[in-house]
Structure formats: C-alpha cells, structure tokens
Image (cartoon, rainbow, N blue to C red; front, side):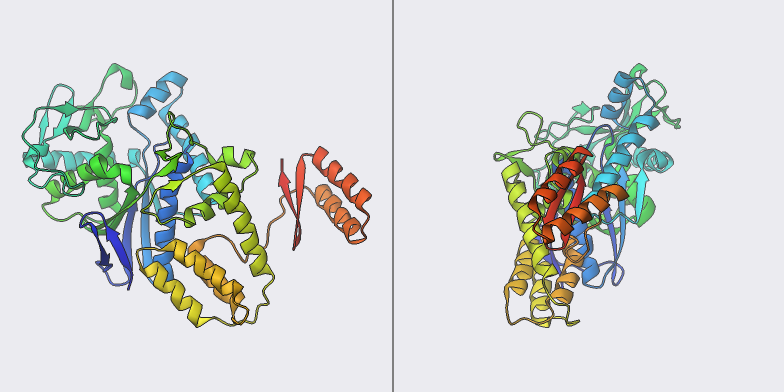
Length: 443
C-alpha cells in the first residue's frame, strides 16, 4: 500500500482512491505566455513520478492537466507584441509540450485550455452569487473569504477576519489573504479578450479556472490534486474555498506539493538566477534527461539546489548507469528481492532517491540475477530510458561518415578518425563515443 504526504492533513496517509484501482488526478499546468523554466518542470516531473509509481503498483490513472491561456500576464504580453491571444498562447503551449516530451514525461490523459471551459466557470460563479459567497463590485465578481468558515485550512492559516480588502490582479501578496476575483469586468486593456455572462461581460480570474476544469473532467470530488508549494498559500487555498462553497462538500482527498528548485539556496527567479529553459540547457551540451536524473536524486518535498555543476554530475551518472545496464546480459529473469525493495521505496511517499539507489545496488551486485529485466521494470517509474537504444537523428551522409570513422578507430587509424570527426563537426554535428559505438548530436 502506498503512503502519500497529504498537505491538507500534514501527514503521510495510506492512499485509498474513491473508485477501486482508478485514480482521478489534476495538475496545475503552465500559464502560456513565455518559455517554461526548469523550476516549473520540477513540478511536472513530480506529476510524472507519481503517475508512473501508481501505474507500477497497478492503478489506472485518469490525469488532467490544464493550460492557463487567459490571465493578466497573457493579456499584457498580447498587447505588447500586438498579436492575438490564440497566436501567443498556442506558440508557448506547443513549446511547453515539446519540452515535456524531451523530459520523457507521460502526456496527461486530457489537456484542457481555460478558454474551453468558460461556461463552466460562469455556472460556478452564478451559484456562489446565489449562495452569498460572492458579491458584485464595479470591476468584477469577488469571493468573500470571511463567509468561508474554514478558509485557509490547506495552508494552516488562522481564522480570517471579515475584510473589505480585495485584489483583482493575478499577482498575489502571499502573506495577506484577501477577497479574490472570480470574474473581471472588461476594461480597455482587455481589448477583444472577453466573454458574455449574465452578471457582465469580462473574463475569469485565475483561481476559478482550475475549479471549473477539474470538476468538468474528474467530477466534483476526486482523488489527487498536485502543484508546486508556491500554490498552497493562495491558489490552492482559493480553489478549495470556491469549490467547496459552491458544492457544499469536500473537493479533493489528497493534495500533493513539490518543493522549490533553488539556485544558491534561493528559489529560482529572475532576481536570484537559475531560470534556465530546456533549450538553454541543451545549448550548453546537456541532455534533458540529465535534468530528470537530477530531480530523481532529491525527494520531491525537499528543496533541490540547481547548478550547472550538479547537472553535469547528473549527466555523467546517467551515462554510467546506462553503460552498466547495457553491459548486462539479458537472462530474462526478474530479481524479486531488489524489485521488492524498489516497491517499498516508492510506497514510502515516492522515495524516488532511494529507489534510484536500489537500481545502482542491483547493478553493482555481482551475484544478482535478472539485472537487465529488473532494471527495465524499475525504469517504468524512473523514466530514464535506461534500456532503450540511442536514436541517431542525422542525415544519411553524416551517419556514413560516423560509421567510416568507427571503422578507422577499430583499425587504430587515429589520424583518419580525427579527420572524419572534423568533417562531421564542419557539417554541424558532434560525435560522442560510447560502448554502443557512437552518438551523433546536432550542434
């Protein structure tokens, strides 16, 4: 039985899905107005490790991820670039999904854009107005947190006193909970971005988007909601308040949050540094799966300090791990002892670092049987492609040159080998030698 740390109860709990062996899971996705950075992707990797672990244990997962394609930051960017909302958001959505694929993240069963669920948002807001949890002002519809008796239970906030303080912006003061916008009436800055509603034309606030989308696909009560720890204090707290106020019952059973990716001990940010994109890392010679390996090395609830030196160490470790597995003979067996230890590790609140160490222990055990098949089974959770053959993505003439160079190396004709390497480099490719032969990369 797997135990998961539930932010709502602040303890590890045995996971019991609402429907036997089926998991309804919602993850907060990106706001698509710019490139996602590696801090964002650490949270996406938590989602993937969780899904893979649950599947390994025999659960069927129905995973929904949202795409926030309308909010303050997006509209500001649309106005500054002079393009349409759709043009901007689809561009960065595509890049984000390509980055996830490069990290070997299993795609969600359903990806839903906020703009595809406006009617559902309007319906919830109408219900909150009717029940007295929301009120209308000159600039929008707001949720009254003083009407919610257990507001802040996820974040452990103290009793919230009645307040007339409101905030319409999507940029929130993390230490001062205030009434938040459910619906923002149309302004000149919004231009063509608005929808009609009985209470006035406008657009949704950020928080209501997630409530509407999750309930639309997963139902009014589902198993797991994930996100980064920065969502606990405001976004997820507000999600719970508006969802449970509208329904009159519990929203989500298990809340899981990943810790920050840090840079020199501080959360990665524009001011502190560390906001690398996947493209930035690739330009520096790092494979995306090296970042995945780095994230595997630290428990999801602990901060992970990032540096290029740490990433380089992770890339080297991943290469060594792959080489060890490739050198194993496939005897077709499964090592039950090590597989049991591996399962025990992931059952303990996704102790992936321990699970990774068990893979290393298996491969270093000279007396162990079933190394290859057992490692392959373990990799269904780790997602490192440990037993997959490297794909060569290069024109045929480049591959022929590489093969010619490989033959020269076998004949110990080092001058010819170096000359061919230079030819390959001049044609825009680099070549790395490994136990399988060679690996070609676009420079």
